[in-house]
Image (cartoon, rainbow, N blue to C red; front, side):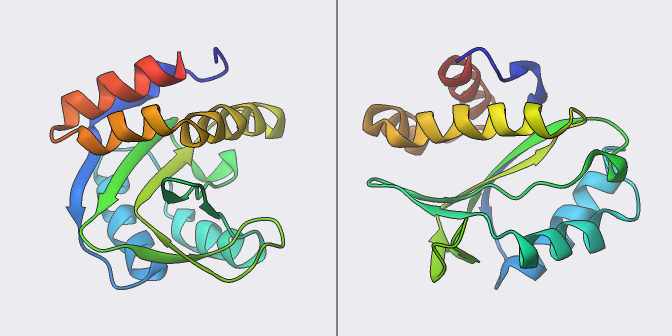
Length: 157
């Protein structure tokens, strides 16, 4: 793939059994984690919820449903990629006019300080991963933050 800075995958940003009733509660809980880690500015929550309403990020692949929420660089302190496997799927709207509800089983929250071209390249790389049934199986098999980081780095390298 080569378009992803794989060092942005870190164990401290991998969450299993994350509980959220909807995407707005999800963003509120992520805001607390990301603020504590020094990753985001206090404008992040409003920016990501507004962006999600205007440009939904849910995607249904053959073997997994995901959401790839992201925010503009001016709301970040430092770049990150958070990988979250919620306890129960969190509903996101379908991306790019697909519409409908996508119950996301995996959420990859991108906080990239690169501009649009960089974000598009990372989104394309991740989509390639989620189109690969074997890669999805590898991701689903992970039970530790370290294992998830190693898997995502390998798949996105």
